[in-house]
Amino acid sequence: MEIFVLNLSAVCLYLAFLLHRVSSISEAVPVRASSPPRGWNSYDSFCWTISEEEFLQSAEIISQRLRPHGYEYVVVDYLWYRRKVKGAYVDSLGFDVIDEWGRMIPDPDRWPSSRGGKGFTEVAKKVHAMGLKFGIHVMRGISTQAFNADTPILDTLKGGAYEDSGRQWRAKDIGLKERACAWMQHGFMSVNTKLGAGRAFLRSLYQQYAEWGVDFVKHDCVFGDDLDINEISFVSEVLKELDRPIVYSLSPGTGVTPAMAKEVSGLVNMYRITGDDWDTWGDVAAHFNVSRDFSAANMIGAKGLQGKSWPDLDMLPLGWLTDPGSNEGPHRTCNLNLDEQRTQMTLWAMAKSPLMFGGDFPYIIGTKGNTRKIKVTPPHLSEVAESNTHVLGLTSCKDPKANSWSIQAHDQELEEICWKGKSGNKIGEPLCLYKSRALLSSDGEMIYKQQYQGKVHLLASKGVGVCLDASPKWKLTSKELRRGSFSKCKRDANQMWQLNPSGALISSYSGLCATVNLVKADVGSGGIRSWIATGRKGEIYVAFFNLNTEKTLISTKISDLAKALPGKNLNGASCKCREVWSAKDYGVLQQTLSTAVGMHGCALFVLNCD
Image (tube, rainbow, N blue to C red; front, side, top):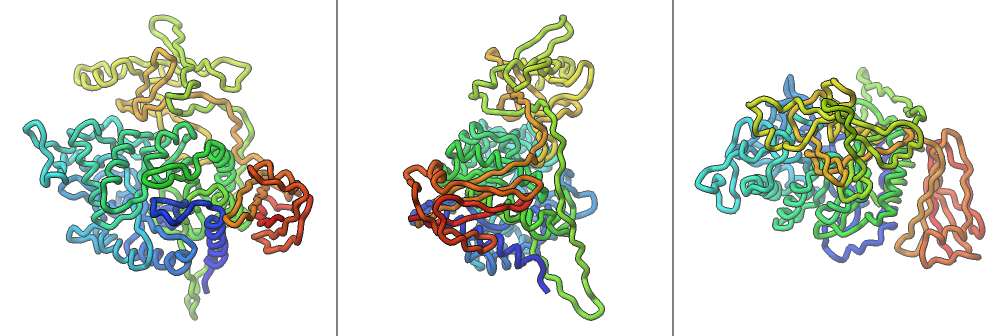
């Protein structure tokens, strides 16, 4: 007996069809990501532990079930190079497989076809034979393991080890140890792209991916609070030069704003605009506002890397799942009920987000004396108390509101950097952080003194040895409003800040500027929302969303729909109407579109109007 797959397929397949219909992008021009990419990613169901056999089984199901509906990518998510042995976990050090040039290669125990220096070549061939495209997840810069081993750097332009200025360059010459990935500090660090050796290393990575037959790269810890515009820009240039077209995706996207996204949208094909999305109603509800903001900023389907670029609402955690940070594969069902799943799929499709399904496909077979019992987890309702809180955020330093910090001196020993800008707080003291000057005083740290001259640590309170981080140490879920965090003070760019004369507080880690906002800590707030889009044949799609915790009647006048559709005049129009999820035929409507929508549910109408 097969469980869950049929319902899940019905959800996924129709919304893929909807996305094809709603999208107005021509497929005649062979450009990258001409429509929002669709496919499957291993993270939500296998975390990092997936094997070659499990991956190819999943790819076969995608090929059979979803490929006819536009799902074409199958992506291996992170740590495919980590050995699955005792002591290995998401941020462990010393368990990765690297080649002589410091490049990550698949763990041969989990990916046996990679032996003999083949990498993912054989896996990619099998995926391509299924009519699909193959993708991998990669991290920023260079691994700490390669840095510690001080491996030589491959010069793909000349062949052999990279040499310049009469010497051979190695990993420790290019790795920026102080710019370690904030949420995987033992794993990876940025490379110095100003050096020819740093650029040679990145070029060798992506040329290898192309040689393996990779069609899609998900580049992590370079965007959002972890922005590394130098690496993104150079990788984009390398991808233009390759003979093989590779779709370029950025992840994660904690703290992303349209202003920040505009700096990278032309360099890539898709980019995350939220933290990790998991199967809670709070996570789903948190995507409505961010979707609205990017749509209003005309970012959807903008010019991208040799094609289009798409704001990405993250993978769809439906089906058979694991838990974030887990060392095991799928072991539970999705916590969203069917109405909440339909709401998520409808929003993702109407917002033209890439659709990357993240769940596994269980096949449960019962035989005499051997029956597998399935425990179904009840739906989870996120309850968040409403309260006002200051939120530290990061934005482009080109944003005028960033220039709102100033020094407030109490005496010679105590100075604060305080936010003077508008944060919505009409009453009370401004948010202030204490400057610290004591961490870089030893003679053995002169390199850090020079590198961070004029830069400071910021403390939440006087005398406490924890400092403000420019990026969280973990991947925040979208329901968590906190931006930035405090942890034990240390010498890395993630905790170094500089106040420039204009009043901008700049992060040495990402080059972004700090801001402060006052928000309500209730991302799962109630209400109703609607989206409107037009199809290729002139049909109108109208989605009603009920974010309330009770059944709600939602209505609109037919004539008012034209306000969101330039050039449309629906005064006196007659519209044939049907609702997708219920398959109900509403007949001909002339004045009002109205229906009762259940808690956390949605209604999706297709209107053909005279």
